[in-house]
Length: 233
Image (cartoon, rainbow, N blue to C red; front, top):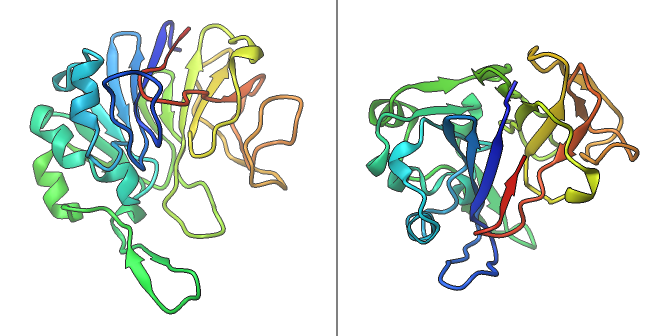
């Protein structure tokens, strides 16, 4: 179980702090006790600049956890691995499949998948590639969920963090694409997936998430809205 958690947004669509760059993308810097993880990498246009501005040393990253294979979540991998070639990569195997977006009208499509790497070249460039559709433990209390079914394709995962103290619910709000679940649990058992009727993830007291993690007394989506914002527990 994680005793201390500190999360900083490195990449998102907008910023509210002078000197930082916004991009269509998503990346979180996660400090779980003495461990440093990156949850997605954005497009790669902002991550190095914002890390410098926020005094975050990319060389300290132990692992990069990828929620899915779209370019706005994986495009910064090449920049990250320049600083942290020792970092392990955790992802769903479908991250490496070709992915496209059909434009309005359906006559044209464009590629939106993982840039720069194939599975083989990424494995050679990092400190180890763990591609799994099943739950994987990163450290004690931190898990990749494995497959999260979605209507528009496979290959999606969330990160599951078991923390010592239940955060105040007032500190949380639902953020689309955050894909980070905090959970207060009596043990560090692996997440168990149980189907539920809704595809949304919502705080306690509202509609259940599609995939519940058990034992489950509290599930939250992480409310880290913009680069430079920090949340500590």
